[in-house]
Image (cartoon, rainbow, N blue to C red; front, side):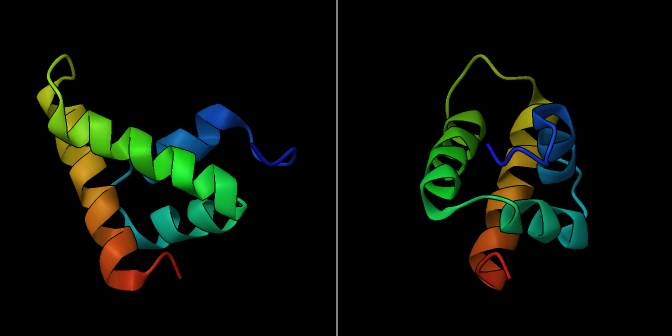
Length: 71
């Protein structure tokens, strides 16, 4: 992860449900990190073992990133 972004802060923004925060956090990541994070969000959204709130937040982040292309 980018040295200037605390991982806890990054994930709290990505899972915030707030499009502006999601997109801002996304921009901190390089292309390789974005791909890893996107895969993890997909796992959170689709696989069992995650709380409903986590699944919904991951889906919201993915939707935001897909519709806004992370920008």
